[in-house]
Image (cartoon, rainbow, N blue to C red):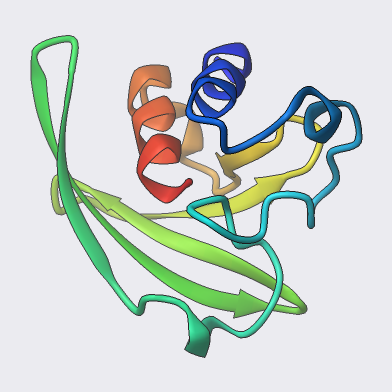
Length: 117
């Protein structure tokens, strides 16, 4: 999952091999790269998008919010309960950290990261 995400960013010239080797939670902070720290006021308030994973349509709504110094997201899939997404610096992607996070299919998390990055 992480490898596909890094390959996509690398192919789009959004990151370099040096970025990958030296990545931390602040590495990807501009130019369509994840915003993991800062003031949510400077980011888009709410975003809704449709994705298709394994021929299954999903409607995703994400809302950014501040938690300490980090920007996190509430994500609702197909109008369901909100999941909390936080930046995982080891995986260099957003991951769901709420109790029901295991219910989110891996393919949906990959596409969700593609939209947030």
